[in-house]
Image (cartoon, rainbow, N blue to C red; front, top):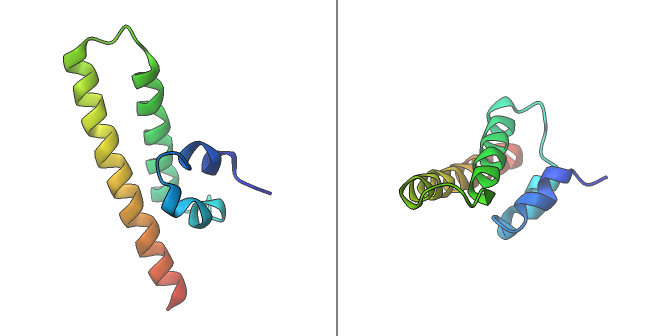
Length: 81
């Protein structure tokens, strides 16, 4: 059964959608990063946020996506060893 979070992230991280479909929810750091990304994405959906604040959240979202990529790739390397 697919993890619903994977579907939401597939637009942001299409190259990692397969890896995320089987991610271990017990991985606290990965789960926390995914939850943070969901929160930031929800904030950016709010059109009433002023442009300077939106720019800050957009930057934070970009950083979260990059960190999530690193975490998943690191996890994949550790699993394959």
